[in-house]
Length: 166
Image 1 (cartoon, rainbow, N blue to C red):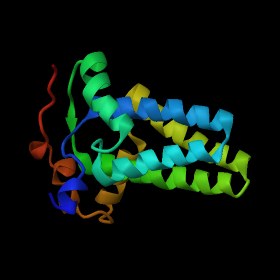
Image 2 (cartoon, rainbow, N blue to C red):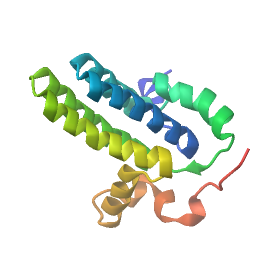
Image 3 (tube, rainbow, N blue to C red):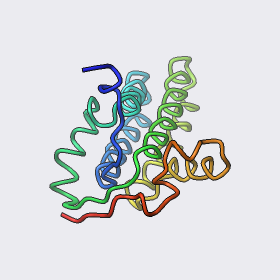
Image 4 (cartoon, helix red, strand yellow):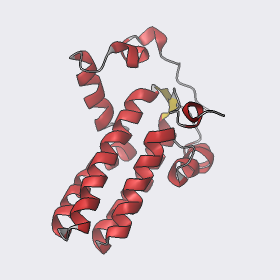
């Protein structure tokens, strides 16, 4: 097994699994804001790093979402393109890493505010199915900053996988 096959992000992605992961992130981030300890900020950032590198493969939240929450709670599948979801996880990684650095440097209130922004974005994903990172991805793709070849299915409806319910 090559490193490139280990560090791949799924495409397409079950939107309900992504929403489940976002809900778990919201819960951990709120606990992190309340407790305000650098180790919890590190857990949030590590979770995003694992999901950026390989989707749910090495992420405890990703595994719980894919194997338990999505199939047993949502009980349906809606396939969406993977690249925008990976981009969104990348934004989460940047934001959570900034919060971690602020916490380690002793700027707890600033870390809490930064992580609060992440809570808002993850709550939109979890509760409404609105992926802010995916929206930014689409904006950047329409402007030519992200090449269309990164996600042809994002712009061409005929390439999208049909939604399934299960």
